[in-house]
Image (cartoon, rainbow, N blue to C red; front, side, top):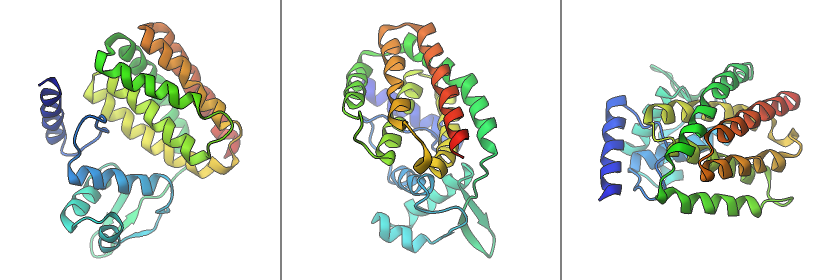
Length: 237
């Protein structure tokens, strides 16, 4: 019953905003258009669909094994998120990347993500603890062996878990948007990043603080992580 109420509240919020902004938890069913949005967003963020590339609805329908309606709705949402550019009579294109945006994105995240970590430590629900344990276990398995893309996929899971646990859909939506745009820039430098596994392993301290309900430690460790990773990205770029 609780999960149903949470899902209804989330859908009402998404309809109010006119788009889906946050990643549903693993226990929530995905709308087909939301599934398409997440898959296309991943193609854009990982540069598999490079900046400036022409977007073909037909190609995406074939690639995602979906019909035109969910793909079109997904592209409309991604345009709202500034990941797709739409030009009348010319078509749709993957939005460009400006690495100079990294400073502004990091500045915003350094202000907001510690607040999300603080709230997550305060509001962690019993249902979240199993997923938190799974994330800690995932961190135990990465030392020295995963590739960059695998590490970034785990990084996404870790940050978006914190956003959800903050129990503030407006904060979650904003942070999800900022993180996505920062992630595109990170992928430009992914092959040149050293000690990426160490950066991802920093999330252990964040998760442990959240698990222990230590709000100040959660906020401080998150702030240190974001600042340090932004410095590493700047060096790589």
